[in-house]
Length: 336
Image 1 (cartoon, rainbow, N blue to C red):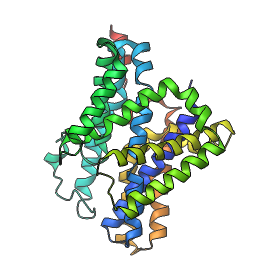
Image 2 (cartoon, rainbow, N blue to C red; image 1 turned 90 degrees about the vertical axis):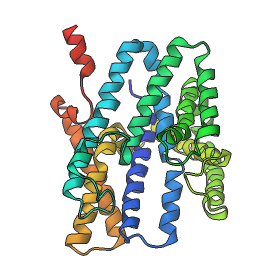
Image 3 (tube, rainbow, N blue to C red; image 1 turned 135 degrees about the vertical axis):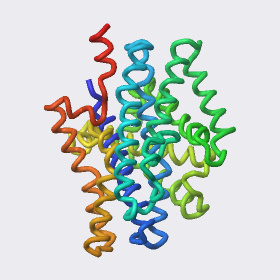
């Protein structure tokens, strides 16, 4: 059974992911000018990916226990490794054809399309998430006091490695701590929902979050990739705001459109850069449109709507689901 408030949280998260990428593209294209856009971009990036790592970590322990090692690994190949390889190639092909119009990656060649390591663009998330899943699975199955070990491991890596410049290990170290927080949240989610899933909890967290974001972005002018205790605090408070709001939406029977988007978050994540960037290119290069409001609205719409509709359609035609998950586990089980 799906956890409705988690779908709301994923929906909010994927909306922020698309907005962040749309805004980043507009800034590089010279359409979003002025410090305010950079500040909004910075605020989004302080917590939107930590949110997704935390949500992913919430279910890893239950999944390992219920599936066992073999099935767990195959399920993550189906839902994380497979879409990583598939969409790294798809997006690479698109970038080759659109190289003369895009803001970045203009040096992508046909040979580079099949250069799958290190991860490019948004796919670093899947790359790091798969590693986190495998490490946590091994610890959960073979190490005493696994949660304590994961807490110590993630804290140690954050302190010692997160600020290493331009390495895959640095990014993994910076985000593993949020994945492990998700493992902790999974054990206390009932109590957490009771304490923050109300209007007073949301109001308090929002006040703290606004103050912290103002101090981080405007007073001290920190950037989202400056890792410290302050940045962890800011990310955690911002995530708790999202969780509080999501729990409230679920408990009040609010419109499910955000939750429905959250349910489709994987295919939206995989394809949104192609469609949202394409809309920017068409508007700017072919119609001479530089209005920031139009670009934001169209970019968000094109980043979400086509992929959401694809997801809904794929539920009736399972073959279309191969765009965002394979069936390695099913094939192996059938042949066994």
